Image (cartoon, rainbow, N blue to C red):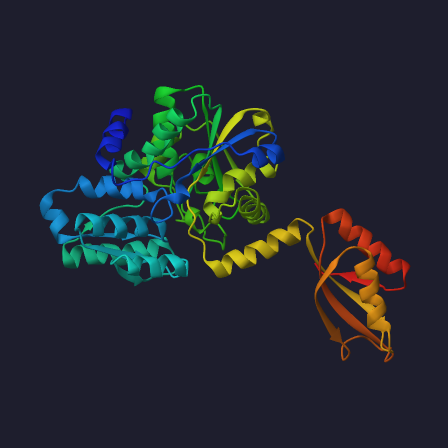
Length: 404
């Protein structure tokens, strides 16, 4: 099966009016921290929070009337399910979604609010897909693949058409890769119209579907590992997407989870933009130094989605602060006599750090009954400030053990 530039242009006309033409503004602060001239394609601003609406609407509109009436089903960790639920409701097409048990709660509840029948089944995408296939057989539903159907790929490619019109002087586009539908659509459009633009895929070190397929020469199953970029973890790249993208994608890199957390924090702080882990990997790749050849170039980051659980976002922010040296924890040995703890807090304050939490540990503080351990969580400016604080504590007689 093939997808062409004509298919993508037809999809753009078909979905017009139902899909938000998301902005692609320049980011001065992200340019400053990466050394590139950064623009951000804000598809996290779609109604359901991700680019997946593009392919979902295109695929639904391409169904024959009889299939639209019977309804559709999809297996998805979330964003494809959201796009299907929303546009199914707009178009009057019944939608059932099967979500694996690791799907974020916010995506499950939003799908339900949008009127879809939601079934949480299976430990991974493969098991969720098997449940969906069983319902296709028993209920006569039409299965719409989230990343490996030509109509889906063509719909996702409309994002690239918008970007090239919005930013004519692009040098490179950084695109998240999970199942491969987005990067396939983007690469088809870009290489047909402006082949000089580099199309670079970014994965998490905990996913790696596309890189594994490149090594094997075909899609292979990748063992699921916990990742902040849950949208990049369908276990394998789609065979159609891989066939279309492998010769059009210029480079694929991966990034560690700690960089993804820090990229989420940077986008929140510097751009006032909330993204999920999958959408943060392009920025993470630049911050991690994975793409030095792009220094000084006009680079577009595809911010593909913003559906992150608030509770997860809170944990991610804290991990990002730790990685950034702005939140640190250490254990100081303090005399268990009047004034001991007061002196510790005085030293911390004099160093310009802010105490977030202190826990006294007497029972497990060693053999010296006149000393206690004070486990301190402290807000600092950066790693240099942390080192300065530790030196000041040791100078004033407070032995410090740093939390790992």
